[in-house]
Image 1 (tube, each protein chain N blue to C red):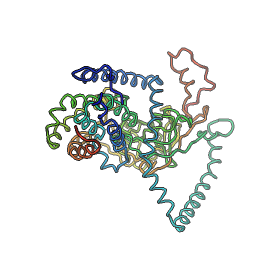
Image 2 (image 1 turned 120 degrees about the vertical axis):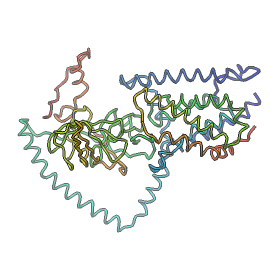
Image 3 (image 1 turned 30 degrees about the horizontal axis):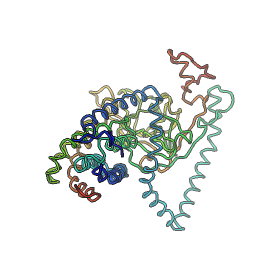
Length: 159
Length: 319
């Protein structure tokens, strides 16, 4: 019980809101095609450093919000992000011992998993977007990972 | 934020059910939601649409917040324009108005002439009954799609697949509605197809979006059909969404490869999709010959619609 109170739940909510805004803020075309999934990045961070703060529920809810925002099939991002959160949480102890740069590779894999799941569901529902740019986004996300992790890390004290 | 396992059910070793079990629950829930959402899309309004309508309202403040910096910037820009620029703008608008007046002077005469030619008693009114101006909310809806968010929704009477135009031409149609906002799928979206007609030759075909805001594609035109560069394309009214005769695009490229049965035709949309801040939602007169059939008329056409409401007047097909 005492431990639960130290979970950075407000920080999770706050950073997720910021990530949502970053995901939908209008950018010039050339920038927006390489915009990484900020929500997924923040979710990966919390899954590594505070897996019990949001559980699977927070990632799932953030995914639903993203779906409503983007007008996609409901729960497609939710499923993808929940999957990413689950995989990350099961490996979080190992990941904590890695440096941020080492984690980038894992982040790249996770963002790709996210993209593949979303792509698969889009295909199933008949709204698939076949653009090579979507496969650039995980790479950009992995490159931004150390900065994002440092930024999000400022919002709580690590345990 | 609630986790799946409550504090009382936390076991000694961990806390509540494992992540695996929780993930499984959410995954099942997601799949169920996706299934119903997709079915709702295919069969019209479902309970999930209602839930989504509410969710749109919940997210609207966030969208406005995202929009606010650019809105503030535009306001600032407008309030610092000089008297000279405003004068020039007024002069330009006056000139435009004069030109438009000249065109409309002739139009009433032409409409009358047209009505006589079509053997219709009395003059035809304009097909557009009512219109509503909406402002674009500057939010990136989805990156790889051509969508817009507009600040008019269900509370303003906007309905699904309502035509949306700008002063220059067809912009798109309403894709999803929330109480205060609606999402518009542009005619240039890769998933959008629009039945069009070549004004000069009368050829009918379908204009597909390409995902790029400056190009439409007309892939189903056989080589021997008469379409030329510079032709104006208007809506043909066959898609049951747009009324007949709204300007859509101008043909920019026609390529005829003798080895292919179909020609490659590109067109540029007339509506300035990139820089339009204001859009128009339009309502059509229900029984106008150029209007699209009403749902009641469609119910008569469909053989399996059991309680077919008698349509007041089946719309006349425009030639």
